[in-house]
Length: 414
Image (cartoon, rainbow, N blue to C red; front, side):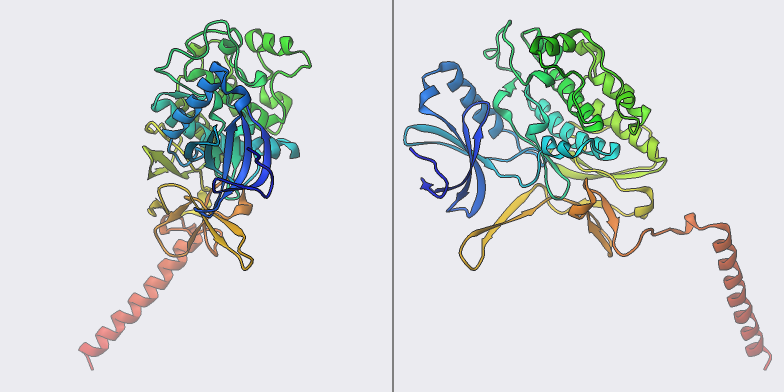
């Protein structure tokens, strides 16, 4: 079977060859029936006789199909086409974190926002019993609206499945492996994803991974035995408040790390609120439903299993008392045709909006998803008036009261 650009096979028009992935070949295709772009992944016949490769491909299908979350790439279908196993997933427009980092380190606030969205996806996956085990910046895609989508579940494993990755085997991307993965320990759990996310966050903040060498052995040895430099030591633009958080995620023993993605995310949010010195509005993902959380201090909030998906408005861009709601429960990609009949992508993301007039969701050029008051830099309630504003209001009220008083006297004594 030939999947070549421009060719249509079993209802999929090949648009672009995406190249080899961890297990199989990937193509950007247009589903001619659904009129949408998708990623189609094939397990070639040449490796279908390899029981381990086949088991992993089937495991990827089974694991990914059960994950439904706004920060996770959507699984569509799995089938056999002309004797070859294929699976299709959502095509997510936008650069990967790897591609974004080609421009250099991210601003710390952007890095924290993106990390928290990735942690929301991981927390959800862990809550339903799935460990990713292969997290890298290459499988985190940033949409034009600033939403992070996690993919790359080729190494994912259900916690209940003892079959894959026996003791002594090493699997994953070397620069992002947790020490227990490097050692080939059996029984990997969600904390290996915490470590990998710590490496990704480190790289987003400083522009490089904590351990880099041309020697694979040296990289593996560093994961097991070397304490990385503080991010602020490598990049002075990184606030020192983030150092302890990143290094906690990168501790050698799983028991010393954040024990859940939720803990990691909460620590980042508290640091972000402290650094900004004000309140924040965020939309949290709770079991697939959007709920509003209004934080006025850095005090601890109890988030649920799939916590924290989108981020944060500056303290000067919201009005206290307004409720943050969601446009939708997920992400939908609409496709239509132009005059020539070609498919046109139109990605709509579940962005936060405010249930009041004059408020719009974040635009693509503002970076990570945020909330902004349309047509105004700041909407200040009465409680935020300054002294001069308060005195002026008192004078006006006094004059109005005086006029009313003399008017009443005139009516009583004509």
